[in-house]
Image 1 (tube, helix red, strand yellow):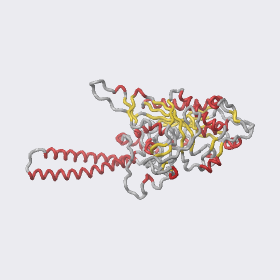
Image 2 (tube, one colour):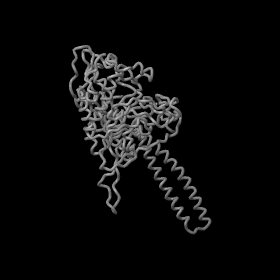
Image 3 (cartoon, one colour):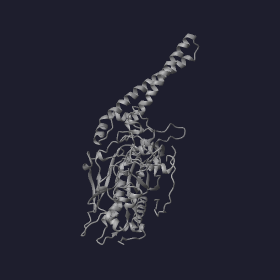
Image 4 (cartoon, helix red, strand yellow):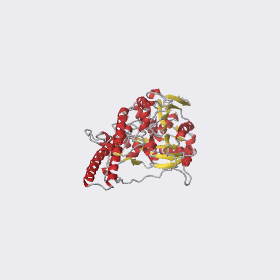
Length: 516
């Protein structure tokens, strides 16, 4: 997710934004728009860009009244609105490994139920095929010359077969939907080198730099922002609610400079720049592995529609190639996307979340790659190296962690987090992550590629089967957390803040934010 990262784990709220059903995870092998009244916006100098019936009636709610969008006392199987290409045979044949993986990741997936439903499905499919064969045999007999009594007998037999087949086909549909719903809860498999356990078991991959030494009393970013007139949390709370903010003066230039710098730096590595839609269909959110529903959902969902606000550009970028077959020659596809992101931050409280550290709306630059399966591990290394290079060039002290199994979101096969030292907060804070999701998302989004070696020549046999791509995501710059790091690490005794040299060309040459 690109941002399973700095802004809480993968979960997403309701705008009376409504939501769709989804389990906590899924397997790796795997209503018109509301009327919105546009408001004027100031032009931004970014390298790349910065409901029911009426806008006044569109509201935002934090959670649905019932799990899955149906009454809690309903016994009906909720029909999935989309289907993942889950390899049930693989799950059955690798039952022990899948069970261990579910345990290691503390998933609530019910493997036994999935296997039981799969077995029932296979049996019903056999019965359906048998009855269809018998029905066809009866139909063929009816084509010949028959005595009236014999024909009547075949008519009765055909009628009974038709009724029995209709019942079985109905059972097959229900079983298919129930199996899909349960199997979507099975998380991605896990890289063998991932540490087992909770966040505390995560392994240190790299340590860069040392904490800055100060010989004067330190301020946190909230105090610095107040003294330098950079933020207004009080006005934002009155206008929008808690965990919103206004950026002012040099902080606006800093945001624009960070976005412009991050996009241009990543483009130099061969990434295509994008700006994305910031409202997407709920089904796309689910297919990417996020939960539009649930008590602690982080998704703002638009009530009266099937849409959500995005929590990361990973979602619309992943959805861009949905239900498509890509030529192998087009891979890898490497994107760097700028977007605004929206998260409910359900359950977040305390001093660790004050100021800009955990907010409901923020700007972010996200990297996303679609590649061949055999390349995803190497591209995962490339993404984390890009992140580490960006943060090193800003002069930050940070550490990179190989995150433990229980801290992985459902789509992630492996995830590296970057935590920077924030002296004002006196702790490390997550500023980025890089995740390899293998084919978890592509099996849900329906993104395949056709190997070039399998394309038949004229007049020759058919091509080999298509394969699912692997997807990866990583955060190049989550603006609020980066502002926290820069203000706290570059503060001076006189109350000013020095701008890192690499950012100055993107901020009109500004070198220092001085007290007024």
